[in-house]
Image (cartoon, rainbow, N blue to C red; front, side, top):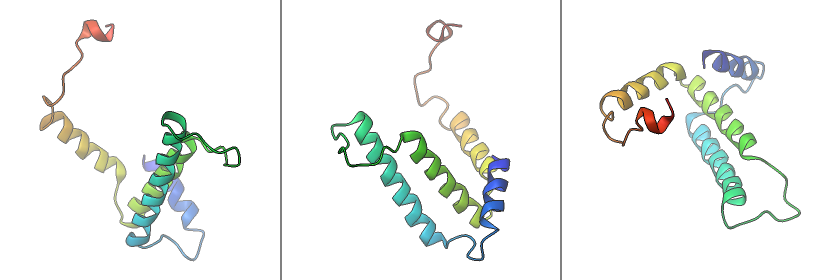
Length: 109
């Protein structure tokens, strides 16, 4: 994750405008999430694409969302790897018994 954050920072740093404000980043995240939702609806929902619509993919939209999320984190000086580690710690402690675990037989181990 650190390498992704560095790569995005190197890209954004070449422009005078730099990162957008937190409010603008929130709007961008919302926009990209909406585009992802639209693709999911086309592929897995009841709303097929029109013939005239571009052929975007779920993978492309997830990539766009990830890019904006990394930009947002970078603009706020947030280490996403550390944020991820904190969330995983929470899931592995507070939420460890929240879901029904698959046993080794079900997993095929």
